[in-house]
Amino acid sequence: MSLRPDNTLISNREMLIELFLTPFRALGAAIENYAVSNARTQTLQAIAAIPEEELRAKGLTRADVVSMNFRHDA
Image (cartoon, rainbow, N blue to C red; front, side, top):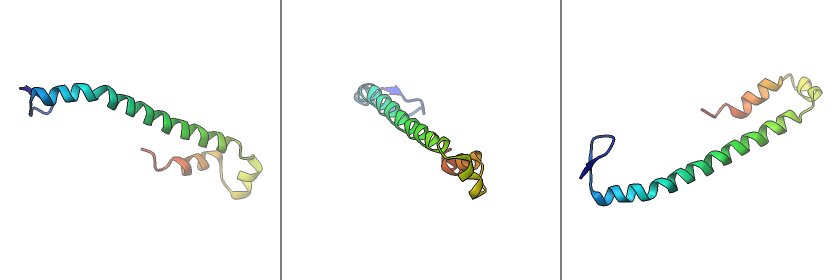
């Protein structure tokens, strides 16, 4: 038996399962981070392509548009 970081006991079997799954969880997190950053990059490129006249006609600045698109991100 061993202790987890939260000071609960973990069996050898549970420890082996955790050790086996750790690289897969890390890979999944890396793929998810890539997908999020790629979507953000595409959004920023689309915002950059909006002509300045169109933004002025709507009464917005580029910073306003970026803020509106990413306000749900923490």
